Length: 226
Image (cartoon, rainbow, N blue to C red; front, side, top):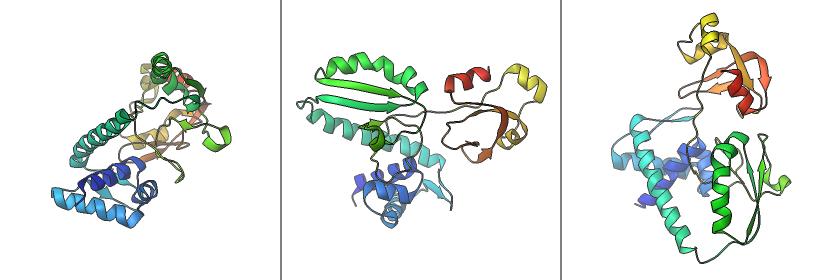
C-alpha cells in the first residue's frame, strides 16, 4: 500500500470538492481516486468523507485527519523545495491575486520576497475579477475556493474563512437569523464577484440570498455590514 498516494488522493479530493476533480489534478481518473480514498478509510477503520451526488463533506474524524495529512504533504513539498534552493529564479513573475487577500497577506511579504530573489521581477496584478492565466499572461494566481479548470495545477497554501455578519442596528430592525436558511428572508449585501453568485456557501448547505445593495469591492461589502 502506497500510503503517501492514498493521503495525496484524500487531500486533493477534500481541496477540489470531488473525486473527479482530484483525479484530473493527479492524472489518475475518478475511479482510482475514489478507490484509493476507500482503501485509506478501510486502513484507518473510519469514515473520512460523507459522499453525496453534489459534494464531499468531511466527517469530524476526517477533519482531524485532513489537518495532519496536509501538514505532512506540505512538509514533503517544503523539503523538495529546499533541495532546489541552489537554483535561483530570474526574470518576470506575473501573479494575479484578489484585493483583500493581497492587502492583508501578500503585500507584507513582498519586500522579503524580492530580497530573497534579487534576480526576479514581480508584477502583482490585484483584481477581484476571475483572471484567465493564459489570456492575462500570468504565471500563477492566488485564489480562494475550488479550481474549475482541469488544466490548472494547484497547491493549497492556507485557509481563508468567510463569516456572516450584521450590524446591531440591522438585527434590531430585522431580527437575528437562527439558521442559514433564514437569510433567504433578509436584506443581504451582495458581493457581485463572489464565485458562487447570489448563493452563500455554508458548511452543510448553500443558501440563495437577495438584497437591495450590490457591490464589487470586498472592503465596501464589509463596510456596508458594519
